[in-house]
Length: 382
Image (cartoon, rainbow, N blue to C red; front, side, top):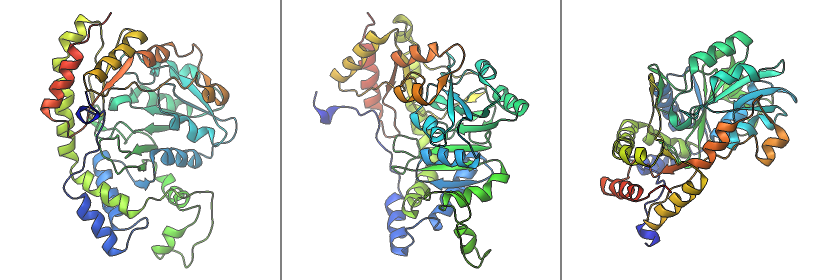
């Protein structure tokens, strides 16, 4: 099987208007941040998420870093989060000297186990970060009530969740602060990009300042001050309007992108069910009340040797599949900068060794989906 014949794990979708909008941004000369496309993309994003405000950023990582700055985290403060997540979820708070406290995941959704969160709270806890794995919602009712009871900030890492919902409420509308990703692997993408959604209006004015290197430059351009000055800590989190032009086109195609991805997800789920049962492989579980955005499709093989053999088998059949997160609590930096919650994270450790993600992107045609399904079905667990 040649590389050219291989079905890739991901291919970024490009809709009709990206090139037109990029050319328009260049012709206008409005290529720096907060131009007309930034305004359009921001409006479309808030409509999808029903968030109360949004600021585009250069990455989801930077949105998370802004959340740490907005919370005024200090060395020794603790932030509860899942161990089964990407490193940016932890790095953003470690950079402020805070201590990530890693909680195990649920065995069904692979989200942070809401039953274990309260046991991780100490008098130094400042925030809880939830990650909606595969775009399937965490138990936001339970976690939200815990945060209210203990006076903790609730942050959503919604990198997977755009278009998902929890009991008909969009993901991205629960946390006081929400980090969004538009990396090329995401449903909506501009190569590299992100956003900070704000559902706590008290944070909006300061967030704008932090994003603009700690200055009130945005207020100056709105005519609210006669000059802009350095007024707070901050950094350069503002993306180019060229990236926003691409995002605008993507958001305008959001419904079509989602429809195409859901069609792939549904075929996998239906046509692999019999094979999975026969081979003791677990398919994704979506609880009642959760609507997922078809961000990724994963399988849980029985053990690590079978997982590795399965990935190699698919590669031989021209299908690129990959594993996912490794447990943060036991990673070198995780052990150095954070700690596991009481009881450790045994489910996370097991899942990290068993999980495989199949190709899933909007332009994966029906014939290639059939090839993937056939390749999967031709594998027998040992």
